[in-house]
Image 1 (cartoon, rainbow, N blue to C red):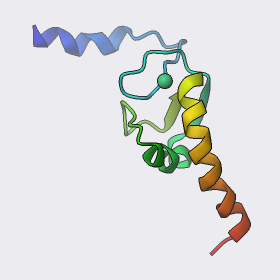
Image 2 (image 1 turned 30 degrees about the horizontal axis):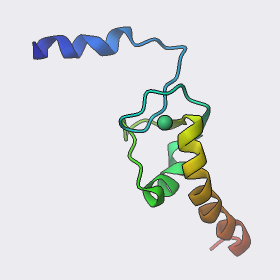
Image 3 (image 1 turned 90 degrees about the vertical axis):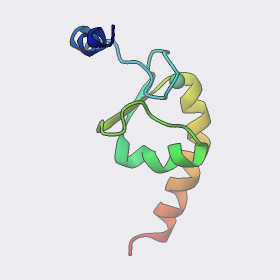
Image 4 (image 1 turned 60 degrees about the horizontal axis):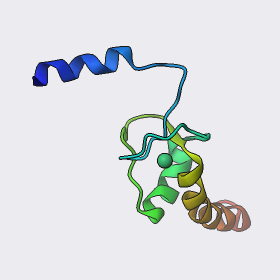
Length: 83
Ligand SMILES: [Zn+2]
């Protein structure tokens, strides 16, 4: 039984991106570089399925949740201006 699981990856449809959040199968609406979005995701309490992936895909619903945190994270970053 468990041997079959390894084969599933092989025929994942490459064109249709799905939301990267664990437990979510909605089509993705936006994609982000994971370095950009990971902090916001952590603040929102969401976990991505593949933490090693460089891209994070979010469906409309999850983007709505993350957007609030994302703006909070990015705003002070812009205002502070560098180290
Ligand atoms: Zn989602």
